[in-house]
Length: 287
Image (cartoon, rainbow, N blue to C red; front, side, top):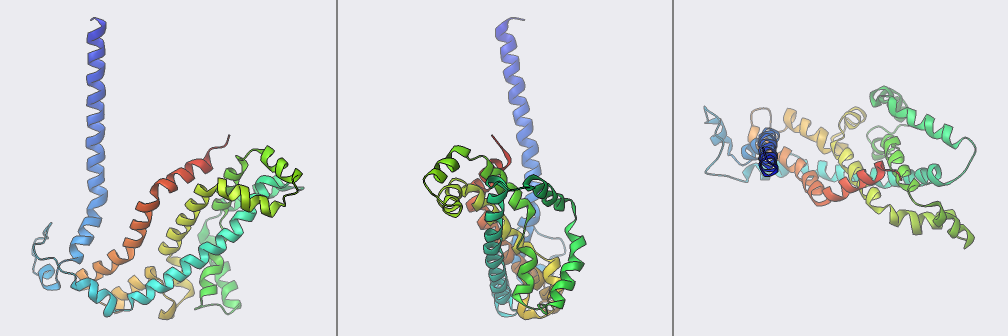
């Protein structure tokens, strides 16, 4: 076979491999997205139409927003949203106040035992979070912080992973910048605020968004530490709505509530997906 034939066969194989890859990705996307489609579809069906279907239909000719109205009027879903926003914003703000100085100290400051302390700090990532739930519960209970925002927020402030991610990002900044700043009489705090934070802004945005998503999806700790509906988050509120709100029979209204809870995170991720990917990649590469 001549060179042109070999080249043509190789091109056909690449095209066939690419077509097969796209087909598999399409099938996988349909499998992953179908539950979300079914959730949205069910949420726009009326209660009567949904219960009259002997065979589930993959479409509806009479969509309605009645279920969404019920989700915000019949049950206190709006209150759960407000609680979750307060919890997510306050926790994320405090996390940044802890994470940024800690990452700066491990990445730039020189002190005895720094590497040993950081290694011990990283070892905490090996401990499953479920093992410290009881300790946190006892501590919060002893401080009489159950059914309160401080009780919800405080155990979620520190994050070893985010400190590690930001520390690796800080370590990529050349030492020459730091030494030049010190020669000019710049303090460590000013150098952090004026140089390091602007340079590492993509990673900081990334950990901010990831923390908000983590807080929004938090379930175990809020469920354990609160039994007053005034402090329920959306994750706990959905369970409460299912048990004592719409009931197990009104599936369309329940799905409308779930869609309303999921929608802010979907929008947040779609808006900042590039920054999230760039921040993770930047934080994980050193050099």
